[in-house]
Length: 159
Image (tube, rainbow, N blue to C red):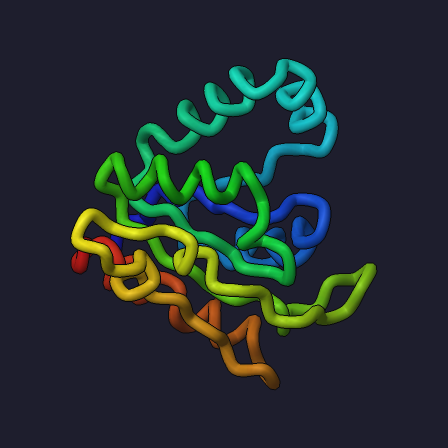
């Protein structure tokens, strides 16, 4: 199976260490997270700069994967990324990452489904169309590793 080009959406400050574990799985296109210094540079450019960075990085991706931590659903730029990807016709899915261990903080509490905040033109919630996966609490990393490619392919096929 060809490696897919994926855009990961997540709350950087809270979840970057959990996200790095998923990126290291290696089943997907190499997609390193932006460094803290690079992200600070982008943020200093203001809202226009951030939107441009997101739009450019999302442009050739086949799927948006929202990695859902405790506060992800409340993040302005995660919301922007979801709306942008959906409106561009990209596949979208969510994965709860609260059971992945962060070296700084351990596990965290499960966050809200970010797709609940979006309503489609037919008045259905986006959460009724976009799947969110909740990996096994006792083996979250291996559950994600064993299923990530299939979850992405399913999202692409169903989009």
